[in-house]
Length: 154
Image (tube, rainbow, N blue to C red; front, side):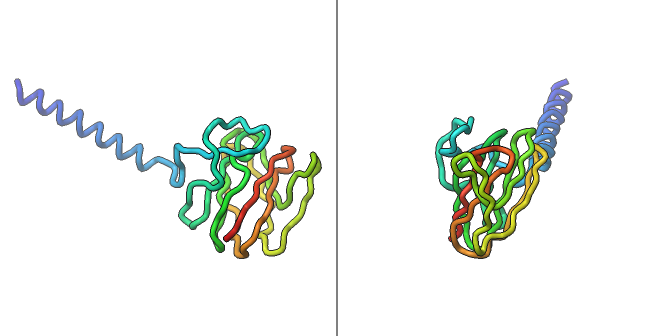
């Protein structure tokens, strides 16, 4: 009778181990549970402030967007890296070169910046770049006034 209990315990432990491996294999690569916050007005994030974000496999960074804003106002990446933008809300964002200034959209592409015109449908991820020139570049969402991101390339 005791060997039957041991076999059942082994089966339970093996099942739990198998489910853990399946869950780990199904996790999205490049995602983290930590988030960064911005100094952007209108941001609903309550996490701690940071000027850069978690790295990606291309040596770039990941910046998350909520329903109306980037969750950080700037990010620093190395020359030749790409930037991964993650739309964490079921909201459309259209990200382009330029910025919002005093409530007015100012489309502009700085010399050396990659041309950006990326539409997000909500709850999706896109890569922008590579940024092959050192400098400071500005991105904004054409849909949400005040939604600006400064990309610093070193």
